[in-house]
Length: 187
Image (cartoon, rainbow, N blue to C red):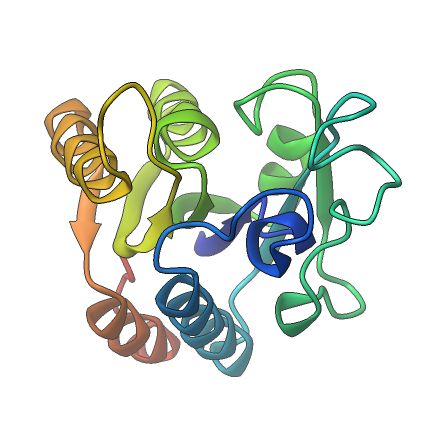
């Protein structure tokens, strides 16, 4: 039984500023996601990339310039890429079969958009019995409905924690992932 890193929708449009402004605190998001990815790879932990496939005209339009997974986080050979059309990575995808094949029972989550795909994926994973740990400083969003991005991130951290998601800072998770090779659990 293992813990996998789920990287949710960290695609070109989130960072490049061409079609939409970069996500809030995009540099920190990228640095923290890269740290988690590096730790998971060094520990031999499963890494699963989630790629949103949006409709024509949207920033993450499938096949469009914003759609590819951002190069600094690009999948390596053997790392599954789950393509999704809904907020939850578990809705109408093969992620459940992928996790079962890899004998994964716990997830560490990083990505975008805090109140959409990150929250929906965390909640779906909880509902399926997975242990879920969200990197509280490695997800982001954009301002919406009169709330700043910082307020949305903080609200999602609170709501997801109340729902049963463990929250940890990136540096704690990087250390835990490293220790997982010695038998400690990263969640």
